[in-house]
Length: 334
Image (cartoon, rainbow, N blue to C red):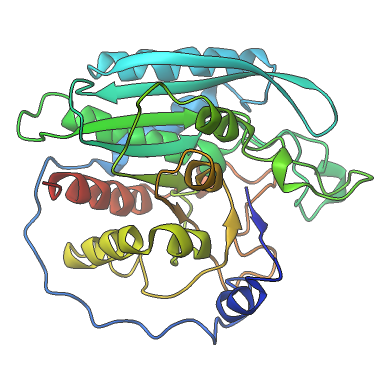
């Protein structure tokens, strides 16, 4: 999602790091590039991730309570099973901003479930029901295909799962969680104020209903990780709760040659699925999320919550940069 957070306590910080400013003049100075390191772990294939994103879009917009949503959910579970993951669904009836009851399904896939040391990777898989940021107001009640804002994050996780499925050298466990009901937040055209709690409903439910004894060393949320021209600035809530993980991921990206995608600059504070993971589940979780500081339409990019969020604007090279960085991070854990 993608509402900027403002509060009395964080106002100064938000002003100083606002990603939506035209020039990001107040962003922190880029740190010196770290020394390069050799790649570890398997190769992440950006073209494969692209196919996984396209397949989700083939179902149509994955809007809550729709047949396309339900069919895509079954497909995601099937793919994780094909890649050797232990898969389960966390179903719930959740209330939307307008009182609509939403048939929500969080999808949980686990690599090496017997391992006690675990890393959480997560993304949302539902589509925004309304293109309420579209420049054409006649599109505001049309659903979003969500190739980037939804499908790209799940696609990267599926490709990571495919890449690591038969590897015997990765000695930690990995949990892939696909959050549902993330994008049913209050639309801009609604005759009521936006409420942050109407967003990230599936992540809120997951964070409040963790399996008994569940722990993760940290989490990484992926949101809008495939759009053309995307760069990933260091999101503010992530730095507030998990600055060490932010540093780890951005340093790793630079070390393996993807520093241009992960500039050492501050971004905005964003309400997203990582907020309940941090605040309700108590798991330090960062958000790798698109940032377009010079885009007049949205700091999340020109296709955000528009009918143009289609596969025509997805770049497998962006997903490659994110996915290979994730694999490097996982295989660098001890």
